[in-house]
Image (cartoon, rainbow, N blue to C red):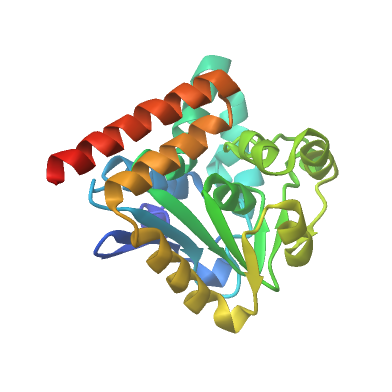
Length: 258
């Protein structure tokens, strides 16, 4: 890894309770490297507790075209990447991938709601980054692909679980195994996109959504987000209990303020 990519081409901007995380490598369609995932994990690890919304976006005409092609080199001297990873002992390789996954999984951390603003290609790691977010706003030129299986690999940056939650078992199986492109209109129909807008309206639509997300009282917003997340895996009785407990806390806080 060269000195030029030690920041992973990730930049951040804070505006009050909103943190914008931008993949800033437009000349390479925001192709990702392990340094990108390390940088993303670092953002999550240092997240200010006052941040309520995280917006993830890509600079230029693509969200992210996926892995930097140099990572497919089998020769560590010419880029290392997957070849180097494949030579490691299995436990060491898995621990390294675990660290990469941390760059994606934090986007569903308690206390924040994450929004992916997606234009153009979101391929492989790019698609998985968009899927890692709670919400997705797609430009009408966007398309998502998970081509890992067609390359002899598997999606390993949290994409299988997040895709499954969004589209269900059979559709997730088909999208992953075929590696086909899911264009914006289909993404909206499947539930992968919350809304699809013209490219020129992407920024304004994201801004409107962020304003709506930050409007409710922070404690109520965070408690509700936690309930929605837990509902994905809880059985009804467990989820009902979680709702009761959360509501009692909200009521107690309201009473204490009156």
